Image 1: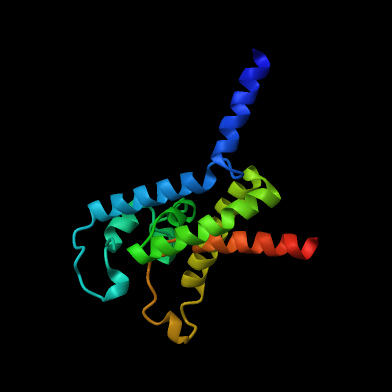
Image 2: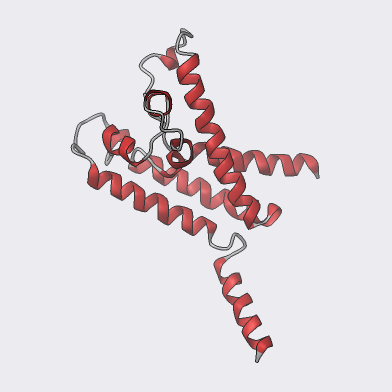
Length: 175
């Protein structure tokens, strides 16, 4: 009987996939937060073209934990370096990020294990938002066209996804 229970537990874990459901959990949380920020937004039809279709407004994103120069240094919201990678700014933004996650998380979990995959995702995202916040605060004077009119908040899973790409590249280089 005990062996049967153990086999049943293993079967449930295998059903979650090699990443033990990490991809599904991140997708559900990101989509849930995206819908919550849309619901909290005042103006969904503010214009801006195709890229801004179904975009939450900056106040809603700030309220839910967007990071960047202003939230981190202006309001002392250091915890936003952890929350911003779960927020997204438009329908296309979340679709592309979740597609990349679905492509990269399973091989990362297979090579490093599900626990380390979570660490790579969270720490990589935090490192990206720390770098973004520091750059916005200390490098404001650099006359680059990409910094003119730069947003005061930053969001998205791109830093976490780039961390997964880096982990996969490092594994390939190491082996």
